[in-house]
Length: 485
Image 1 (cartoon, rainbow, N blue to C red):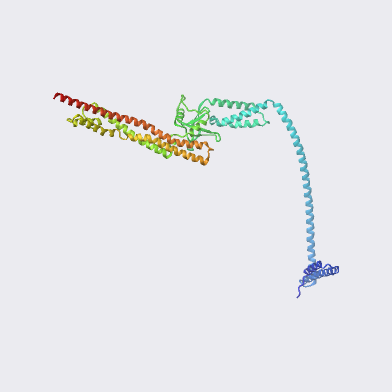
Image 2 (tube, rainbow, N blue to C red):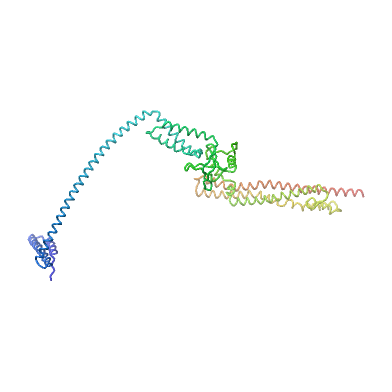
């Protein structure tokens, strides 16, 4: 069976016709294409007819299909007509809305221009009528702003709250030219200024919540000293305007200032000395930052601890030597008042030499007494040389720590530059701490050594004096015996 596709045949013929330019050939091809089109329709009908059993059935199917197609087309036409009408209606509504918006815009623009002219005229009239009052309101705005800034740092606000809100509202209202200040607002501003001046000259106690140093909030009795300081339980407090709270200073100033605060807290309306900060907290902040003695010592580092250890050793030796020489001196003084020699003291042991050598000549006795005194000298001057060495070595160790600290400081300057003077000043301060510690140890050690050395030399001199007296007494007795013989 031969397969024939009219559509492909027609396309091939068209392509060939485009290539062949002869009119006669083109005419022939056109006729052939028409014939092929009719043939294809005939073939299609023939194929469709092959699917039915007879011609009546084919006719019936063609009629029913035509009727269905006609109904479908009618529905489509009716739907298209409805959509055309709807689109027309929407177009008319859009045009109406546009025209209304244009009219509204024109009206509002004209109204805006009229309002601008009217506002300008009314502003000019208001300025003309206010006259000098406008300058007054400007002054009120400035005073209200300055007063609010003052109240933010004033400790009086810790007792009297809510003053800043009124001043803020007054300053804002005076900044606008549409609102005038009332007599009540002007009097309220004057009253707040007068109350601040009055309260700054009073010492008043009140109860409120205080944030302690450990973070807990306690209801505490607070004493306000004018507009300068707040204290509670013998400690200084600070007022924080951002949160409206009162907090205890985490770090308190030195003990003498805290003692004055404790005296004021425990006083009952009597006059007591108090460390007042007239700057409202600036000086107190500097005093709080100042390091105490322990922190100064810690700044010395390992060298500082070595100096303190040496000083402690010297102090212990000095205490031991002081009590030893004190006891020996007391025994020597008691021995001077007694004729009986006692071996519990240096002078008694020297006097025993005389009793142990009753028949020795003067020269022999003198040598034995010198020997006895020489035995007593090391006991009396023991460890005094070590105290002297400590007094000399301590400042040298301090100087070593200073030099080491200065080297570290200059290395830091080399790395970070001199942009921050506090860095250099802090490093030099820490470096000089070791020198201070060395001098603190050396100076007392010099005085202690001098005192103990003088005490031991006085006892040794007393032994030499008594020894010389014993020799003189023996020589005189020998001379008298020789004369009697």
